[in-house]
Image (cartoon, rainbow, N blue to C red):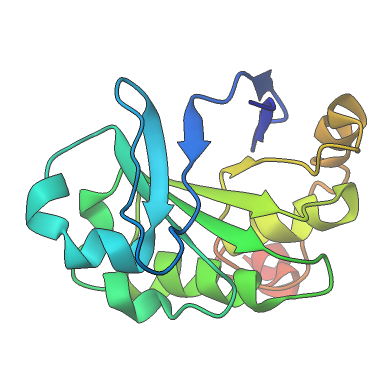
Length: 168
């Protein structure tokens, strides 16, 4: 499994295995003794079976609606949002909805086509960890995560825009 970057710029070994959506007619195959991320809709369908299991988190695709998790977000130790291609910005909105509307407090991870240029924006939207695309330099990306000390706009990391913070 590839390493991941944490919001503080540290690089650590990934402890979570992403389980792909099963093909039609197949069952969900969850490896034993591993921490796994399963498709969110399958977790909802089998919630009673997975309830309280700290080794099972979920992943949302960019076309999934985070509302499916609305009443259960904080039952999950980790929610990952898949970016199928770098130009698909729906994952940013999903992250903000999970944090701001649904009050998700645990780890939020960006997976998929995640590039260095996106990390600062992902951080501002509420992501905690980032699984970089395999062909990218994780050390360079970790340094880029904290290029900017302040953001102008309000976001999940600050409620006030910079001009209001300066005024107070």
